[in-house]
Every structure is written in structure tokens, then in C-alpha cells.
Length: 175
Image (cartoon, rainbow, N blue to C red; front, top):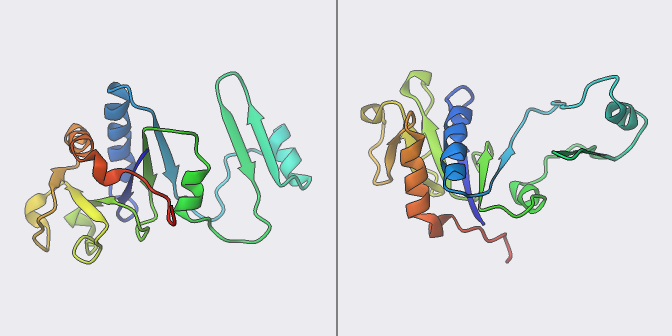
């Protein structure tokens, strides 16, 4: 399994880029999963649905399954976000796992950066950033030897990932 993170501030275009990367990897016959960081109180369930009623009644986990998909809703007894490595361990086998968020995780990442947002980049100080995807390479505030890609061309990023796949081979911490 290969794992790569995508980091950058909210609104920079990570989700759009990841959508393109998913499509490019799937077009090559590869199985792709995504781990997405969400805000504290997100909910994919709706009041009135049986699964929501079960959770409201106190169930720790509710697994909803059909012939086409499965959703596991898990309530935590104490507040605390699992590590990205714990979440990767929850996934079924895949060729590639794309991580959105967890910008400080200890795994290889693609930084998505736009000058217009006025945010400082992570790549000068983060050794886990392996490449930068941007809308304006000339605006990067610090030169870098890392690959710099056009964020509007996910196919170029897919090619980079596949050409350098061993760099993204995942080994869980302590393995």
C-alpha cells in the first residue's frame, strides 16, 4: 500500500486536486481510499434515520450496510482524534491511500499552495513535503529542489506519484 498526504490551508484546492488524482489512479486500475480530516462536530447521519436513533440511544458503533456500500459510525467515549496511522489501519487493502488534512503528520505529503491566500508555505520547514502543487510556481516564496507541479493538472501529479511510488510505500510506525 502507498500513502500520500495532501496538506495546505482550507480553501486552497486540496479536495479538487485529490478528486483528479483519484480519477487518474482509478483509470490505471488502482484501488484508492481516502482519509479526510473533518471538523470536530461533523455528522454524516440524519435525525430520524434508524442509525441516528441507535446512536442517540447510546450505541457506541452503528454499522449500516447495503449491497453497494458500508458506513461505520463510531462514537468516542472521550474526545480525542485518532492518529492518521490508527485511521489508516481501519481501512481495507488499497493500492493508494490519499490523506487530506493532518498537515503535521509524519508521512510523505504534497503541499497545495496558492500565493493569493497569503499563507506561509510548509515545505521550507517540513521534511515530509515531497512536492508542491501550486497555481503560480513563480510566486513560491522560497526556492525548492522538490518537484513543483501545476495544481490544475492532476495527471502530472499522478505520473509523479507512480514514477516515485517506492517513496510512498507505507510502513506503520513501529513496523
